[in-house]
Length: 141
Image (cartoon, rainbow, N blue to C red; front, side, top):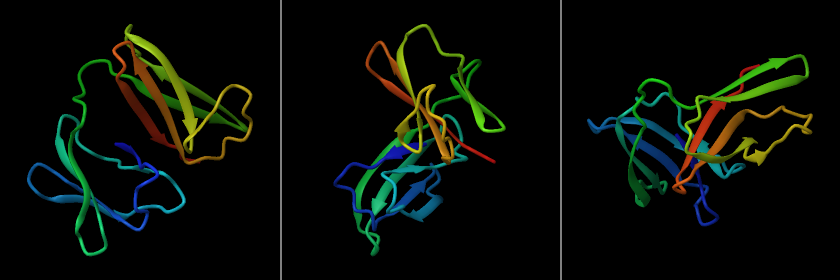
């Protein structure tokens, strides 16, 4: 799950993600250097309670989020790094995709970018109905 925090987010807050059984599966401080948080290893098709907490556990913001069920072919973000180059592929996009943007550490990249030393590679896929899906992977060197 990729969460982008707005300008009003308290960067001293704590992210809490709780599963359907009430078990807290993630609890960590926000990264004050970035305006996003990547939560990995969530179960597809599961509803999670996501909350931004103050240091005393008072709730600043909360919402229930359901992860997408994995069925058949689903959009996939793939990268392959060879020497100083990186091949980025977005596979299995459905016919109703209207556009997409590829980003590295939150900054849009294109074919002329040469310095790909980021950690988080994302693709924002926009569908014709206006909905947006975020595909994300952590770059392992």
